[in-house]
Image 1 (tube, one colour):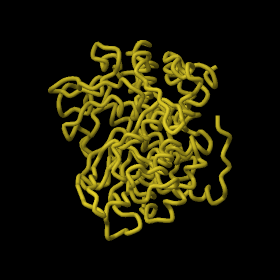
Image 2 (tube, rainbow, N blue to C red):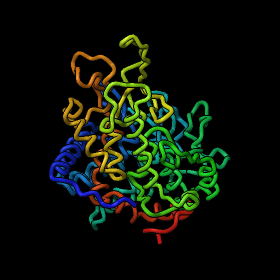
Image 3 (cartoon, one colour):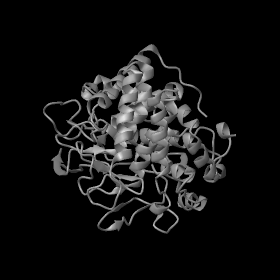
Image 4 (cartoon, rainbow, N blue to C red):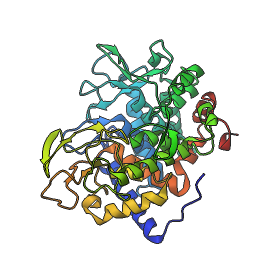
Length: 434
């Protein structure tokens, strides 16, 4: 376990500003009538259930920091939970969800399925985790806070995790009303760790323990740049479950075999990211030990340009990763912030570097993504800047800064009996679970 990293006054001020700016997304990019949070600041975009779950997780932190009052947070949370409790759950293509799960994208006004999106298992997990976080935080004996706890518990209990396996061991990515289950499954190490923990902890429709064993049996252990770790290419896969799960010093069977824990694993994955950028094998402009962060994100493509006599291919949205790619020179600053708890000693200098450029001057803080190689007249020093912000980027900034400071969300979720039960049924032992 790395030693505690002491922040300077400059570092604290930097993080305070980033967190406050990122939190504003959840104050402004929401429909107050139903609590849904917009996926992206692009015009007429729908709500993302993952962004809504991150908002539910962030409201308690907002109360603690004075970003909003407890009364306002209670009202926002209740509005959201009441909407999901009353929304249509059926096989209808226009419903909000089915079997306790929800469609990935919902119309901001009606809350119904949009974009022909799938009933998303992992995004439903992020939403439900936010509901459970709210249930733990709002613990006062008032009518409204009691209703938050009751609604959150009921919404979690109605999720049919077992149905989502489609008669196999691992969980499917999702389901569509006309074509049924998607062909893809969550069967490798990625952001779905939280999904399995929630499924295993269910008192109503639980996953069997063998589902988790089937998942971990396909894990890939690799040695890259001298770091041995459980491999996954994009940085977000080493972060998203950690937003809610305190995985410090607890181990499942896989990690016991390697004498490691998932927190240290994410630290090593973060260092691999930095080392890849330092080596910069594809010679992208700007990459260095203080400019890195490849993850699933928007980019300046799709486009092929000839730059300094060399043909360069740029992507739009793709899961960028290291060291095998894809990589088109696009960096996601929010993903660097999300690694703050794991490796503050390399994250802070990188954030300070970003602040010196045009990358950190948006109303919501850091730009979502940028590409220094891609030519852009409006920002010669940083190249292409994403003109949009995303809820699923802002949430990790807000919450992982706080987890680094004091373990705020980790402490909340450690009090959730379903999380504890899910971890134990997955085979986790030691540390705070003892």
